Image (cartoon, rainbow, N blue to C red; front, side, top):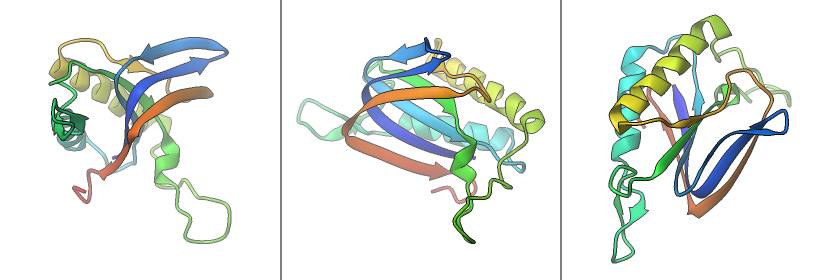
Length: 150
């Protein structure tokens, strides 16, 4: 599993010109799922995301987590995080999990995140044509991969 995390002052996702979810200060998390992913990847990433100290404390030092600031989370599925650009100019998405594998993992990720946060998080819709808007705060953008634990 791969995630691209952006610290945002606001973010939203539209589907068919309708806002599906929107958040204020918090995290926009783009999630890519591959065939070999499972519950252990979800557990590692959710815990890591919620503990990341990337919000400023009163001294202006990135020392607070999303839970510390009581921020919001918007989670969007994004298979293109598994793009391979090794050959040619057209990316290959062969590593991205097919919907029958990815959807249950995406739903489990949402459920796990909500349990750990203690409330609802914003989401997109798996497989939909989504328009994501955000104001990256900082900018702060972090990439993590559960296989490399990076």
